[in-house]
Amino acid sequence: MHPYETLFVIDPTLDDEAVESTIAKFEDLIKKHKGTVDKTDRWGKKRLAYEIRGHNDGFYVVIDFTADADTVTELDRVLHITDPVIRSMIIRADDKIAAQQVEV
Image (cartoon, rainbow, N blue to C red; front, side, top):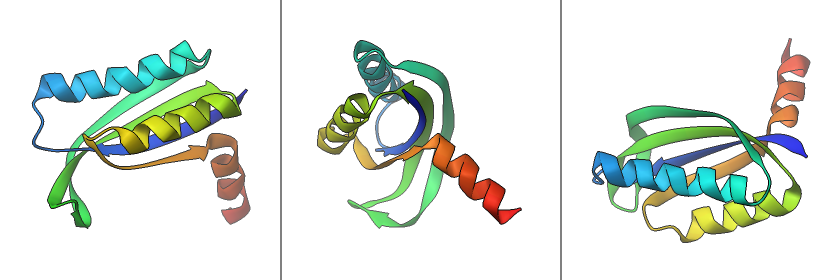
């Protein structure tokens, strides 16, 4: 099991309940596949750098979690087929830490 971080952008036209439901869906998926959710940051509604699917804004969410490769593959698959998610990415957190150490 390795540490990961996923950042995804949710459709800004959704109400608060739908946003929370979408976030809970991904947290539950991680837990269901024997991963652990370490931290969930809701950055809120932010302006996008460029238009995505007709949206200029999006609700940003970052989830730090620990999981195995199969869980990450399933999470990536579900992120891509979930309509309210307009953009997503998953990175291995220890790779991020290594990159920061190289920059110093």
